[in-house]
Image (cartoon, rainbow, N blue to C red; front, side, top):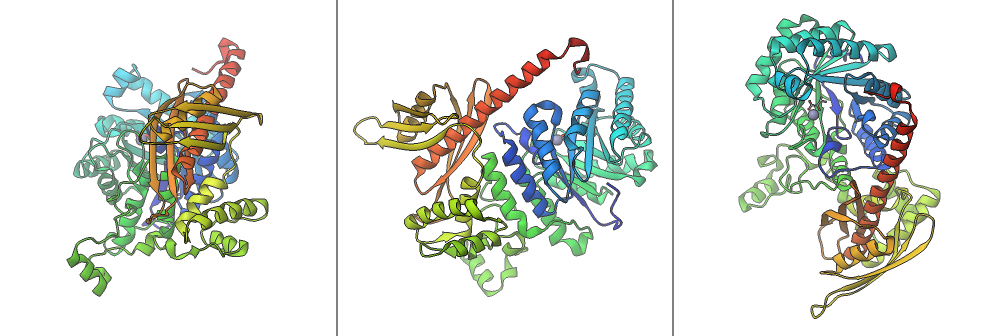
Length: 528
Ligand code: KIV
Ligand code: ZN
């Protein structure tokens, strides 16, 4: 990617699907990653880091699918400096209109000595070879000296020089463990510019983690010091405490543009929706007081504040809710709304739905509208995410019966449709109705499952709100997550559970196939 002509234009590099997906308990399947990538494109991010292709066949497949389908942003694949990593990244991104390989190696002595167990000379050699190898395939190559902020700046500068000599077009400085402070990061980058004048000819990028809650502040310091690419993730998800939050950085530059003078190409009205989609599919809730996208970010509780806002919005609001897309609840449908009204409402939300998909959506909409007076945009969005996604092959909850009472333990029976279309049933007496349903599903499918997380949320306010459930579970060491939406919490929970189970089993099959394929390759040609 050539640096933008406008020196004040900041490249937004989204790593929700790579660093974000490395958060504990998140396991998105290809279709879910694709959905998020399409939404990121609508949000107008410049680069999507779609995954780390060498790490699993599932990751490879997702990056490849995103490269083939998503139009607009550059699609990047992550790679260590190993030849096999770079080859896998290239094969995964090669079909993108604008592919990028992002390769990295640590420059801190802690990492070099204890993790890589090698020498500084070897790190320089690996960086050189990796960038040169990637450059054989494509022009757009990003290089990151990992743990740079805890590394000797002189040595990091040497390695960056080598990467630029070999043709790296972006140099990304990661604060891998979220250790630096804004003034320190400014000084570090200023020194780097001094030591590596060629840094002015490439894009300088920053990638900050949030271990001390400074990811956004450090990223901002990086931009003020001259960086023009910022790596971030929706809702700030990522390793440990997460990455810099995309929505906070974008809205900071947008809200204070007159003072900062930098701008992004992000379509701010897509922010809220992107945040909800990522939260829904990852099962990671957004804290109510989270800046920009939290439920309370635009709510005013105190009487004095409410009074002020009613008289003049700007008394207590520095941003308008509509700027981040929080006016979506203006769409309201009811049980008398027809197919055409539904199609138009979905189109307004950005979902192009017709034919059989529209029929399915309409059937489900009618079921919900029968139970709920008003179906809002938020309901429709939840419904579309739940219903219109292709079911991954696996188990489906067909029906359930639960006997619940405070006098005896609840008992559940479930009917499940298996991957080959077979009908399975199972029963269980559990601690609570949901526990009984989950165990009845285990009995029907004959699987041993560890439940890791279970969450219930209401899509909107009100007694008749749609319930949204999220399940993370583990089967034979494989994690799977699933979501379900319904006016009935038990049904939503059962759906989420069978989806999570199918996801975990699918991952187990993919891993077993990959193991078989590796076993078939002679020892001498295997990747290091
Ligand atoms: O935090 C980090 O250092 C990373 C690199 C791979 C850029 O995620
Ligand atoms: Zn990171």
